[in-house]
Image (cartoon, rainbow, N blue to C red):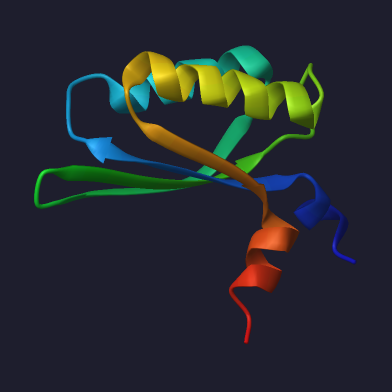
Length: 95
């Protein structure tokens, strides 16, 4: 198994577009020691969609705690945030 993939997560953020989404999510990642490796975002009609590839090897909390932190952030900013380990994400999207 690719050891790098063990430390990678896919974070998806969706919801109504508004000011400060990227800043809020990026700040939460930085506070947790998570590095953004790639980021794509777009507006689809009135919906904001962002997908991030992140490295969690420097994270100072457990993966479970990180997912809980992102869930709290999603409620705080009124967006949906999903966090998945990249290897699981890849397997889910492979036929």
